[in-house]
Length: 229
Image (cartoon, rainbow, N blue to C red; front, side):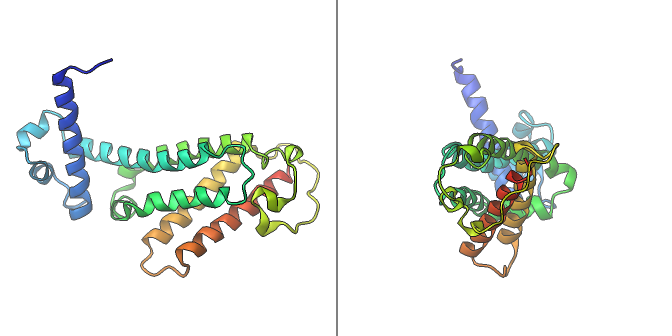
């Protein structure tokens, strides 16, 4: 449905306020996040701001929601483009997409992870995790990794060269985790590693090394999960 000029102006003002809120949150931190500062950043009066948002909590919620969507959109796009691929570099490209998305706004990431009360940041973070988990589960369900009988070639040809030399997989175990459960474990593990690396002032690994180590972790877990089905 086409927006009326009034709706378009309203949407533009909401975007302006949210962007101002994001800038204030990064610049002044959670303790300095106020409607007066947001209004000043947006170049409007506090009264005008209150026509669109009832309080700073409402602005904060939209800031976190949009940031979470930006990160998940980039990771989801990397996954969606590669469902069914067996390219050895596929997994590394997806992990690199996640790391890049977090790096691009590391200042906001730091505030979200270290300054916001958990009740404030949790909904946005949970939404991000769920979306990436859903995409990862879809990737697993549709790829050769989830269906070894479909695979043609060696583990190395599936992008699993770091764990190519493994003993035969054990028989399937009743009740073994499926793609959804596997993706839940992978996403949470990788998220914590990526966030910690971005925020650590002196991480013990270079950027290339952390991507390789996350790739090794995921590859080993992929094969281990296949061995229990």
